[in-house]
Image (cartoon, rainbow, N blue to C red; front, side):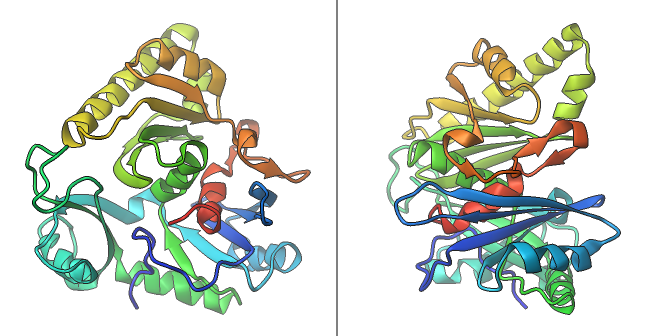
Length: 322
């Protein structure tokens, strides 16, 4: 079984009215259901947390009462379960990228390429024979790789629990959906500071171009005194600026002018501090500015160590073009 495609844009014959996304973690399963009526903003109908001991059985019980079998279902991979690799695009038709990329990554992964499931995305602005904005660089691909056995196991477990798994996705694409919702097609950077770690992505033409995982979370920041928190944020700003500078060198035709800050801890305060240290405009990403929430649904609760942001972003794949 091949890994379902999530990165490349492909026409879809049908777009369901709702999407349920599930982030499976060691301690819990985090789920969110998003719908959108014609001409209206996306709406988060419900968010739910299933304790790890209840697993997919508990998820099935919630699903029966809160979702529909017709909903698109998305599972988010854990960061440790996949790799994102950038490589030169092979000289083949786009429909053959995945097969050609399979052999290009064989020395970059720690398991047999025969056991890999992967998907590819060609980076924007880097076209064969078009040197504008790239300094003459070769066309590039982003390739996401996971183990085939992991995909097969996930699909089998969901089927056993009476659930149909339709899409496998990654957190970076969930954040991409949130960023596109806020900015449209503009080039931008987007960082989400979750409970234990942070994800930084950079987009151009609505495509994921750069991603980084940073070892700093809202729980850590909350536990620091003011001086140490300031020191950590200065380090974070330096890492962000270095990533932005590298992006500018690779995608010089992109006009990246904004960083959006999503955080489970003091998003307005972090936005202000980062804005004082970075060379681009920094804005707080407030989910309620772009998404409606039904009563009881919430994007995060730091005191309970719950963060639905990634699940909500993944569920937006039926709202934001992918």
